[in-house]
Length: 362
Image (cartoon, rainbow, N blue to C red; front, side, top):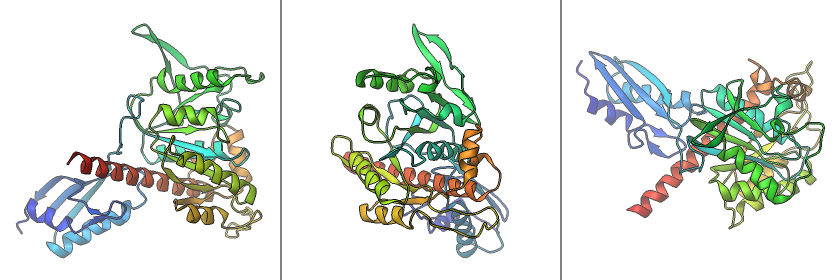
């Protein structure tokens, strides 16, 4: 059987990337085609290692080869990834900045930030995490790094901070530079300067995603971060109660303001339901059901998933080993599913941005 590269590309041009709505060949996602007799191997370069549709795309490629060329072809599909970026983020080496926010405190925003970052890293992405919650930094506790101090080096007469690495991601928190037993009574300009230093004075290296744990509410830090750095998008965390949903709506409204204009990646509903350990199949919606989904539908933004209210999630954070690091658990699955949806939204946003730029340039 004589198979040509042109035949392979023609067959695979019938496979559409479900999110980007274009075929794999047009998107230049097919690479490294090798043909030897009736043996065919090629790579599919996804836009993120956290792609939730990886299996679907691989099966579609195999079916296309079987249908348009021959069922006799022995196909090897190598699924790889190259995370996309939409523009210069203002931080050298960083492809995408994801802000995690909440309209009010106490909804588990930091828990979502930490487990989102770790879940993205677990899929193979290069990830950093900034704890920009100046007044209540919790990242040192959640990573078991109380008392840790980042190293600093001199480069061309300028001090460079080395982020601390743990569990496969790079970390910086204002909590690494302050006394945890003392309050931080900083005025607005001091806060803005400190937060910018976490971005500008750190040696982040090459990162696919830099996750920012913002403080609750809508204040100086949000304005500083969104106006100083091109944010790829924001993830908004809420709980099912009406009060939390109302505050989440205000937070989303801030990102949508013309002066800020940050895309909303979606809404995460934390503490969505309670599942007893002895009844893992049962879900009890003790704070109400579907509030996050309704808000997402109302504002026409993606719903990224429900995170259960389970004591193990907070216990693992308090112990310095976030829950997503567990190999198998319903909580781990919930966070990984959420992270895949976030990565999916990043890829969609970047593709839309690239399309707009191409249209303008042409």
